[in-house]
Image (cartoon, rainbow, N blue to C red; front, side, top):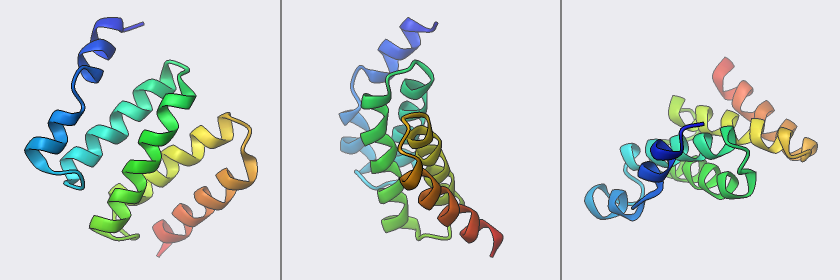
Length: 102
């Protein structure tokens, strides 16, 4: 649907790491957004490691209760659900919901 945007976005993801750092919130937001874009294009196998990295990095850097962390948990949960990994998706989505309700 947006091949030029996808090509541009995926051109040099390592530049984020070099300029901002691997666990910088802006880097992790970009990683999460790229994972979501790939998911929207049906590239689930490429999206999953990015969404996991965003979630793990956000949790390590910002803490489990931060909105960026719970958002990335929810995004990964939706991907896992779409892949048929229902048990893992339910556990992750439940954890995100529990944190958001606090």
